[in-house]
Length: 151
Image (cartoon, rainbow, N blue to C red; front, side, top):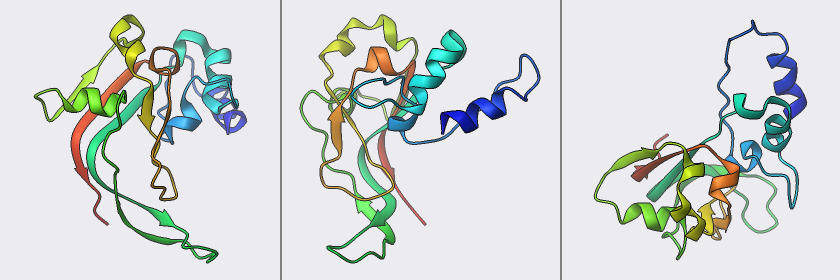
């Protein structure tokens, strides 16, 4: 993934920017436990690489779900699980706003208390939260309190 992105970046005019949309786990500045494309991109482009994390408090989303050993993944609407303790979603849900963004995440030490973030990807999973280090993995947080996926 990072090779494809670097290929594109090497061919755009100096000063031009590109916007990528992908699962946070792919674009975060993560290097361990497994390297992500974002880890490689951050290493190569430094401060020129910015990560905006999109987070949702509650609602539904469209994805696929494999039922048991059935290899056919059906696209459908699935519920977002309730925000878990010490998650970014739980902290942001306490705010009296429907949506907001946090710029310059690296400067907010309160985010060190956030241990988890939602990870809802291309397949439905009841366990939607995973460990996260916000101040190291992204630059901006965009939070929406409710989102209901429609086809």
